[in-house]
Length: 204
Image 1 (spheres, rainbow, N blue to C red):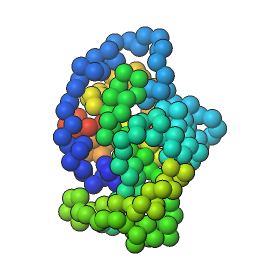
Image 2 (tube, rainbow, N blue to C red):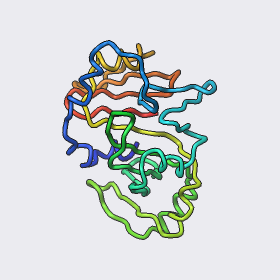
Image 3 (cartoon, rainbow, N blue to C red):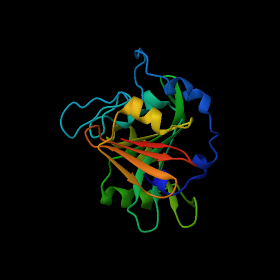
């Protein structure tokens, strides 16, 4: 996700709140909450549903109802990468868990080019990564577009014990650096990035 890969400041400044996850380190009690990050449904092979949303099926309007009406949508263009249309929710909640959410929105290359040409504003986020603020015309049609992917960034810190208890044993674990490891759950459509010195990122 471009919001994440660009190293945006909003991730770096999030305060660590481990107390919010204290209850997770104990053996899981019966879950009475719904819409939690580990409650992932698989309607069919290659499909997943989480937070009541299904990438490829659910629309931006549904994500707004789920994550909150305060959100920012723009095209993010990082050097060497294809532009991406994304929506960013600064503050949302999944059951008792707070965090941030980013939605990747379906749009083909021609549509993105046209949107960038009509952009109301273009600004640099970090280095040469550009953010295109959509025109009023394009904002008016955004709610009907489908979701391509969902990213959730919990406010609190996860650890290996919590991940294995709540999400189960991953199909694969990939070390991506001294502090970063990916827990891959292809059957659930989830890539969970565990960073011992940063924020955990759940990409569905």
